[in-house]
Length: 262
Length: 252
Image (tube, rainbow over all chains, first blue to last red):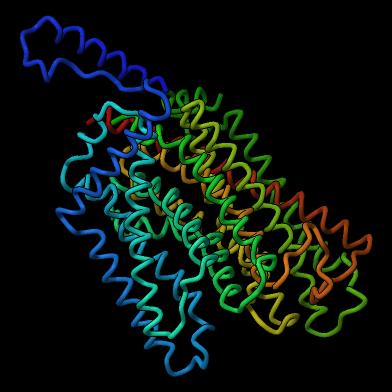
């Protein structure tokens, strides 16, 4: 907190000293844009997410990789279980969630990894917005990538395993699971962005913490595929929602600490 | 406290002389060794055999005291690591980060002990080394999380960054454990279990007599001592390691 306030005060000084010098009007100093209420905050979150989506639209490195990996993984799992598994719906819930977990790591690695590789992380951190807005913007962008990949997986799963996962509660579970996954994953991606062996470290950190999401997702999907009633699987939705709530809150609280010396 | 003793040791270079903290640690180590010896005697000799078991199961149930002790030691370690990580994030005193690191390292090893002793016991009792029982699942995932913590720390060069990132991860790691446990518990049954409900289908359980509960008490004490002794030894070692690092930087 102290580091942030120091940054704020030094920026304020810069603004004051700049004011005396003749400069173009556009560059007349930087002010932390902390005011403006919830609407302004959401616009900042949207701006960060839009930046990620735009750079993805131009570079096409995250979504393409995740989509290709997911399709490939469905096919490989289909081959692997073809001989020994009599009913595809025995393995489909597990396959679906394993691919979400492993494919998601690829996208999350690029979330901050791409910023580090392009050298744009410092520029992003200099953006005059609250760090938490950056966090939620990154979450939003990663969620869009992951949900798009999951939607793409549905028809592929239908073709390979002949099982439609297009059911409202499975989709709700996938959405809640993705929220929790991305909220923890974005924080961990930020933690690992500057470490050695970043690409391999993220899954090692992330997967054991994701076990509740994985178990709840698999059980929920299996229960829906078995045609159980809502009462039989609503506690899984509860676990997913509780996970999302707990970890979003804590990640929001500690995200400020990550770059306090940057 | 010990910082003074360490630095004075460094200046006068009398490595052979014992200071207050060294003596305290020595006493703790001796007490731990005695307690562990007492636990071995109590669990193997003193505790009466279980009346409802025979053969291999009778032999195997004696590992329970070590298993329970490991479990308590690991639990204490991870609680201490949570306290250490939160206190570090608030106070920014590296000593607390060393507390987190030392207790996680010790806790991971003791936690592995829990899993291994459990597997050894479950082979004769459940006829399998492994099953996806919620306790097994949660304890294994816990150990894996803390192994990840140790690996993660090694990947960071800056000492302060290491402490901060490690503490953030340790916080998340600890919080995910109860969720893992409850989701694993629900995962194995079709209907949700009532919280704290007794498992009527539990295999290999046994009622506890007086000699057994005394042995359990000894196990609790001796493994708490073992954790404390190892943790404090590792903590002081980490302190010295950082001190050496600082001195090296000064020299260079």
